[in-house]
Image 1 (tube, helix red, strand yellow):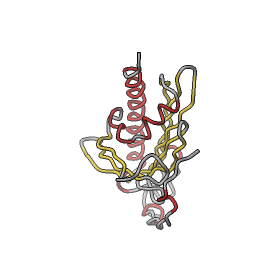
Image 2 (tube, rainbow, N blue to C red):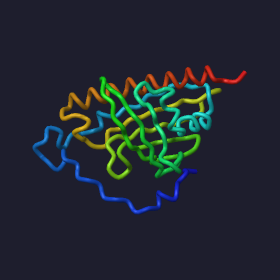
Image 3 (cartoon, rainbow, N blue to C red):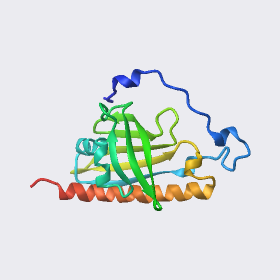
Length: 186
């Protein structure tokens, strides 16, 4: 059963217009975003419930991610739909802070969040867990929801971002699997 917070019952605000879709002259107007998504998988020696608990504790992501640091829920929030968190990210020598909102929280199965918030986000990250043998398949997916100047202004910019994020996801999954193995009890 998904976890929800009382905040998820609040009225949502309207999203700001996407400048790329409102300006037909923009080079990315009408771009098919499907090619800018990916999914990566890794077998991990842990149950789906254990993996869910690790991943939904967003403060732990810096333990495995090569580009995310100082991730934390907003005061009073936790791993439920509507919860918000922020984190510091880095790429190519630049650093920035992102604000995200949990959009799916199904213990032992799936945890997902949208960078920028559910109503106006630009990227969706999701984790899915399924049992396999004595462990689990951990699956991490990334989906570009809309174009935004912060992501780049050309198809090449978006492809470079997608490739970087795919490499980051692969590194994160491998680091997670190795960390779990190193922290297994006797």
